[in-house]
Image (cartoon, rainbow, N blue to C red; front, side, top):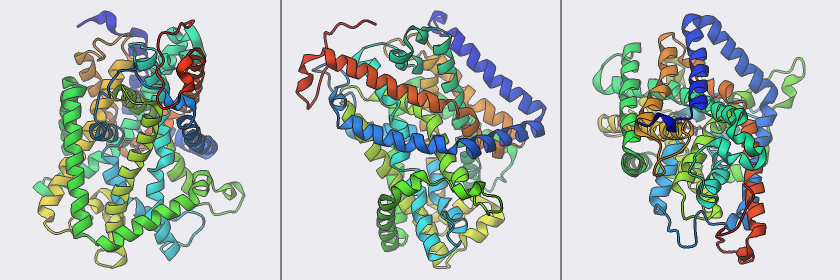
Length: 525
Ligand code: NM2
């Protein structure tokens, strides 16, 4: 173990902030929960517009970059081969960026919209049904994936084109902040990113653990309790710590591939044994509805809510703003990860690949799992909403699966899948956290003990909160911890444009589009 490789200011400051949140929350749980809830309302109530602007702006920016000359730049030298085949690449990127939450929301998000639709529509009406089937897909669609993709641009650029052996957000901001990247400003950027990601991970665990617990309960009969949920968290940590320890080419890749096969199995099963025609038609129709309405959906902030006397639904704050905030806190991490696995691709391939494969994957989940539940509700074969209102969403998810044939087999597979899905996000997250808290990587990798260390750190906040009964508070952690990340996102877009445009000016073969390699040019920094 080489202590000199650790970036001590970043490492220590991140831990100090983490513990200065965890300890007061343990000591004063009620006051702590109320502060977090107020902070959440303050951010989503007042700055929702910033998140929505960012989402739409980033999607437009990425489409512009892909089709500009900057998009043709290759991540590597002229003869660099793609490090991973497209299937593994897409599987890894999807498994890293998407965790168990897609099983949760994919199954049940429609139920919330059916009861509380957007745009002032009457609950449970036909309009509400159509929006219920579409809105979840939108929240996991192209705008969301654009947020994920943006940070990959500058990071991959510096790593493979300018060949700096550091996977850090501060490094990717260098073209704009200059030598401050090595000073306190750089440290603050990295620490804010770490803190945001810990918050995002908190939201994921707060949703995933109760769902896995219900699955385990259904299979084994063990009652859902705090202790049981803690054991689930520990088992998940052990799995992803091990996978992270074994590295990108072994554990992380293996789990991602397994993840994708299990996903394909579950999706195919529900599609074939569920109402196939309804699922196909509703999914197709929903895609059309989103394409048709994407601008209205991406900009709807319910402005009338601030008029006195208006009965607000708070839909945008509760859903779209919450979602964008959650995607944003994960984005620099996914960007770092996507960058790390994209050697040999062009910027355009990386961007469009992420947008397209990512969106398609999410459409499949929402289309198949969500519409299956919706069909049960509409055909009155199972009252999902009634069940959910009585026993909660995690139990409702398992109850929906219980309506399938051979559910004794499907429910354990689904539960295992949820654990693997969670693990494949958290193994890459701990890998990346270690990379950011390190000054240099050895052989392109952060140190092993360091990865394990962050794996356990990811679990500490949720575990502490669970024991004080605050898993619900934790669901909003992304928003509170992630607000500063909005500004980091803008910095990253700016950095990429500045660096790549400067290099293109210096590079003569930039006139031939297809694929441009940036080599042998002298730069100032
Ligand atoms: N996002 C994609 O919990 C998870 O599945 C991780 C969640 C940001 C909504 C990512």
